[in-house]
Length: 352
Image (cartoon, rainbow, N blue to C red; front, side, top):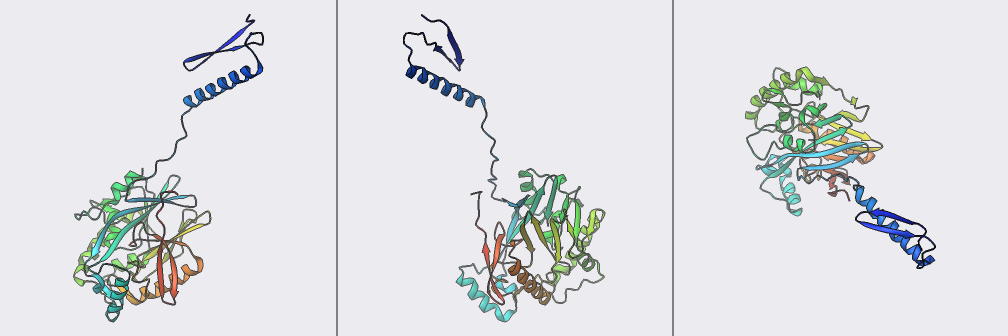
């Protein structure tokens, strides 16, 4: 005889738990029934509770996401180029046979020097910073990827609050102005006074540069126009100036241009040094810091600066990021001798 019964609905099933007076009851069957009930109730709750949300990793080949302490960082590609003149654009000329040997021993192509265009983007809360902006709108399909890719990580042009310029070569400054208007309307534009002074001098001094002099009048004219458009949002940073509560600090690194700058970034004890155009190739300029490229405005000063910064890097051991180094541009510096170093690229990781 059943004195009382308890019926519980679990999903599509109905389970009866009987009292002690049921003739088939014993301790073993009661415990088995209880375990079955608990198991089905747990399963029902699990079915009703959605699984935790796991962030979707970026699978865009033009984006590499990493962290600098509390700062979310992205390396975004603006494209690539191949300088067909190859080691003919490297100096001094007398060292070119040695350069060729270094390239061959590392299985590098000799028909040109590849230049990657890596743009660093930082996000901290509602603040977004970019470091140079690539070519911008450009007829060559190998360039100008940055804007579309930036949007793919959920950052619109109006979200950028700080725009840093290292120097005014077109692959760095071009993207800051689009159709004669400021590309990032809500961003302060940061640059150095020596860079502005150089481009607005009556006759910018390219006398020490090895680059094609026919390019220079147009480059100067275009840069003056860009700087005039950016003037309402321009803020000049001095050597050692910092923003973002000290998380970003600028350092003058002249030679490539008069006001060329590099950037120290730190958060929660983690450091990144953005070396910009201190080097242009992952072998040349590391193998021998005295080797220079035709784009340098003052090659001798570029060498002095590179030696100084490399000595600083070997002392402090920060993680490095390079604008023209192989994608995604992250790595470390290793010393081989007083004037010879190696670029050690960081392992590409999807989070593991």
